[in-house]
Image (cartoon, rainbow, N blue to C red; front, side):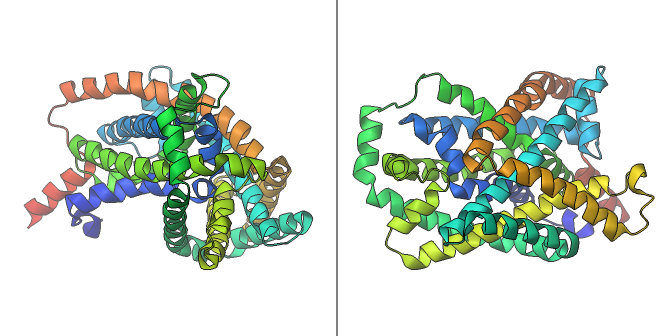
Length: 394
């Protein structure tokens, strides 16, 4: 904590902004499937709705951070209890949403990693079993190593994606310009992509536990919370707009080639740059695996010490049992394919997220945060209090 308190305000603001960016621009984003399902398939509205979705998400997360630190919450349960007070039982909406979203995320990881191995020429059944075995082994024995390497893998995949986005946009700049200039719309209903703005923000809100926890150790006040989410909005909006703009120019070709599962990989293979294509495949696979391992471990860590399992004395055995149960459920769901998981699994979780997170924080949350500020004008967040305490000791 002493080291954290010495971090400059700008570094702290960037650190919290990066947590949201890292959660959003991960393996799922890198496949291109999310962007295609929620934006690109509708045509020219894709860049506009992408920006609006990021605006909605960061505005919601800003209220999350403020409420979390105003009330000195220690975990997400306390946060949602405070949000719904005096109807505290409604906190269960978040619990249901969170576990469903985590299961969908792991299922998407398995489906995505399997699709990557298939693109490398490995048969589907073998790819699925290989991905399952790797995830299970690393969850039990190698989670610390994977967690340590996750940051580096994320950076590599983002660099690969950036190169693919820029190259892909250059190769289809004429098509992209025509679509945007003529406002070509391909969806069945013009309102649909704008409704999906809320859905996308809904399922991306799964980042709340890590975002809230990081803000507690870094941010000093509401002003810094606003700055961090403003910066995160810019980071996420730019990355998402590059992705959807690139895919917009290639969409009809991707669809005709039946490559909607991993559309970014299809573009990478068409750029003519073998090095980028190979690096993208490897880094995407590793990024998906790291996401899967850390996510599964989070659930394992939550349930391995439940009373019903305490009759098993070995922690490793309990961990393996819980991991196997989670893997079985997720592998079964993964059989539906990445596209269906993103469309329906993420979609329905997103609808729940709208009701349990987005709308409540932008209504009840805003009201309670403003009320708290009026009633406690001298309240200081934990980092600010610690800095004052250190100054007094010095």
